[in-house]
Length: 255
Image (cartoon, rainbow, N blue to C red; front, side):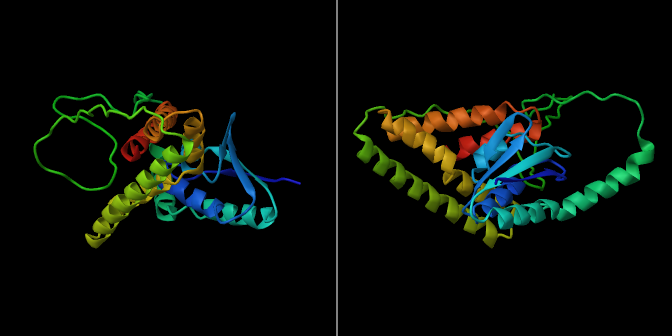
């Protein structure tokens, strides 16, 4: 019989990329099929992209569903991982303390909600956004415009396209691993964590299944990869929480 557990996510910014990655890697340790339900949405717990599309905000309840030979152990370990903060126990403790300290200061004053696209309106000469890592940068500001890639659309056969896909993934994995190592040598752990997330996305099982399905439908590897990445990124970008929606950038970075 399938095991299930209802549990509340206490991470200050919900199940964003880093705690979601820890949840996914924990789930991958087990043979059982593991799904996570949030509202009407259900995700493969072994897929980071699938988990991000749930849009789990802080204080939200999720249902963990486990079915398989090691289901009892799996659900126990996942419960412990969530309760211990998924790598953010210090942030959770600090957040709870701040809520307690500020409890008596709360008023009925309403505040405007930030836009859902991850950006906040400019005030004077200030432009507010969501930081990818802590720190201060000083220098000229340039507007980044993403160039359009020319995608090879000629289909060379399923076997050939799958080989091209795997070769491209291996090259990308090597580049990301090198960047991660470079950040660690500079003691830039927060930046290294970003590349950890990118490596996880690169090997995402749901993403790869989607790409292979398109290749088997006679799309080139490049075309199948790009269209699948774009579709997944669109789902994440459409989330209500601006911080979670901003993680669509990670998919485009890997893509």
